[in-house]
Image (cartoon, rainbow, N blue to C red; front, side, top):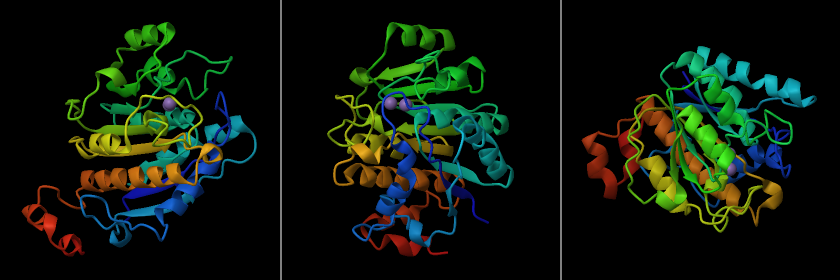
Length: 291
Ligand code: MN
Ligand code: MN
């Protein structure tokens, strides 16, 4: 049985500044399967040889934006009901609200880890309560999750600071973050990665350039040191229109590999405490995971 499903959500109708993220999923896949790289995670798991996941392609989200948006939650629920956890490729960040609604119905004690330059806690933006600047306000006002932890924030406005206080959001601002900072996360964990958490020097292909962010290495480090089970994830806000020589697509694909590895680990499909793995760090890694 395939237990983790990759699903593209080509949707950017709720973007406030630029369109483009709807074009992202096939571009990230292209980078993932590029002949210039391989499909191994840094833990040494060969995703190309792992039966633990499948790619469902892109959800059909054509036509009317409201109807398209309404299709996301049931698509996730359907996969969760079938025993498959989802790793979604955005799309703009507005997709996180319907995804997390589906997840919260299954995991009542869900913790949300959001990596982002922005808190996305606006009550509304430009008259749109479903703007990509609002999804975490919708999630929190409905009491969908046990905790929301935001890391990398560097654009907090007075309104959003008030929203964060109202909802009890735990914010680790970018200026307060340092490598190795313990986030004390307990599972089940849903991981939402807005690529603008990265510094635009590392990831120029996003709609909102916000300098002073993570290096790719630092972001990977956060993902790799999560010790709670990652039951679902999204990677959003890649905007190919803004990208430079597909470099951000490659960053998105790299992040995808590490997140997918984490999700397979959470499913117990390979055991990170396996002593063979530790011993094999400098040996031929893959032979230990051959099914
Ligand atoms: Mn953002
Ligand atoms: Mn965001």
